[in-house]
Amino acid sequence: MVCPDKEFRVSFRSIAMDDPAQQWEVHLTFPAQATEASVLPLFASDWDGVPIVKGAFECMGGRWPIVGGHGEMTGAAFMKGIRDKEKAIWFMRPGQEPVPGGLTFG
Image 1 (cartoon, rainbow, N blue to C red):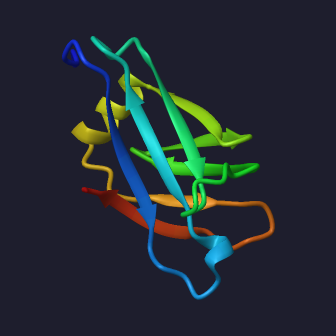
Image 2: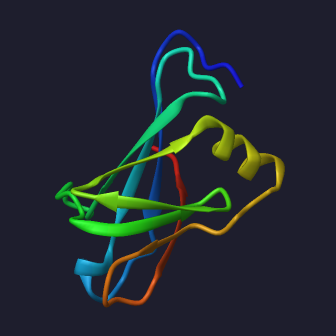
């Protein structure tokens, strides 16, 4: 994996929930020229952009802790998830049921 000379971002978003407090969005940023050795920042928020205080984002076969809206995964973990065709995407918050989501385009 070698990214282009320009940073890019992919976004994941929860399904719509009856309780808007359960909705989430996670942005995964690929820095310019990122490789499998790179750290890829995660930013987790509600649908209004307010950072999620604490939780875990499950994606690409791993569970990535989120604190103060921020977390990270490695390029290697991302590529392993792609190769293994991992499809599960969830966000877990303390004291709440996990909420599923998916890759978004816009």
